[in-house]
Length: 293
Image (tube, rainbow, N blue to C red; front, side, top):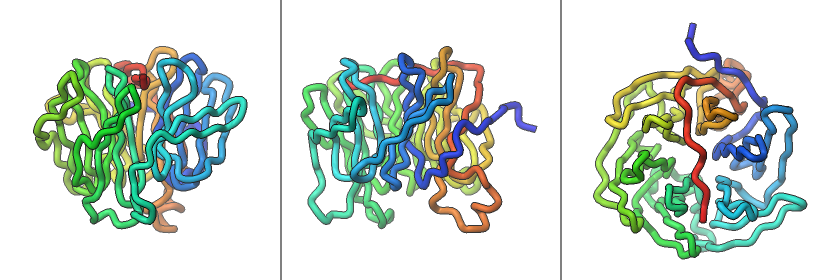
């Protein structure tokens, strides 16, 4: 029996559950069902739920420091989004040529308020056409790196001097030196994932600087030391956990999103909670998600 009590928070049936975001002042967990073009939110204390149908893929949601709406990744670019009283979308950048088949995938904000967002080909994962973008707080957009198949993460060390970033297609997580001005140094392979581990997907860092990674196809979320050493494993009752984040009043709840895509009918039957959002209590608290701006 696992020492971790993983409970189902919402049987959302997500095709591609991604981008969990805890917003403390709302007691709300937001997450996206990327390919079903839906943004969800649940008030964890009351259980109240809300969903917003989006006009296209919704890849991630990031809170803003000024509290004026959110930043969001849509299929074709980066936008400001206001959810209430009604949905409003204002694009800032559309970096992909029409018909390119490219889309945004995953994003996080560093401690200075800069936003880092990856891209990928929507259907042909073997194409290394993904880019890692850096959105400055003045809304200027830069290409920080390229040549990725499936960009996932990123997340950052406690001192802000290292960025962890993943190419899920290669099963590889990189560590980049990150300078104060946002320049990336030469990456090193931080961890190569092997057979049976699953592919590294969404990730976050806790208050001890350890890295938590959802492992697609591996049915687990794992905690690693900054050295890459495996410290803890949380089995999840689905094949494809996709991302994770910390939340709750004490930031000791790890929320895990999952995906039903890339499962056979037999696998779906064997894992009836596929596509759900899970919550598990952990010993070491996380950190509040950094906000853009």
